[in-house]
Image (cartoon, rainbow, N blue to C red):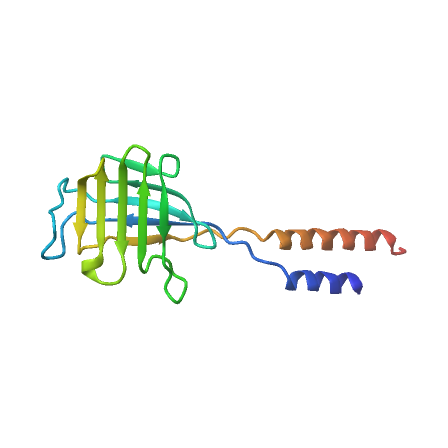
Length: 170
């Protein structure tokens, strides 16, 4: 009876592990705003992916404008996937990544169309600029990972059941 109670208590306190999520950003190359300070010089867009852990921290990324590619291996910066009230990431966002050799990628959307900007600069010169027509983020549905605690409790259950059978008289 104690074994069964212990197993039930173990099941109550198990934390279910969650997998990392992959988000894909597809930028736009045509301006959606009037009075834009500059046309898109390269007629290109920022596209990429970011991997978020369960807490929403960026742990890997890969962004390109078609000419330059920034990853966690060659750049640093911030990726802020501001969540909606329901926990969905990238309702608004701020992405700023830079390399040691003067390449900077930026993508921001804080709520209004005019405040949506994608830009790339190389050594201080504007390479790509897009304002008023933000891109879109889509999530790749994560695959849930098995809960380690559940596996441990299952193993203990089998162990206890085997011991009980070997002890009981026939």
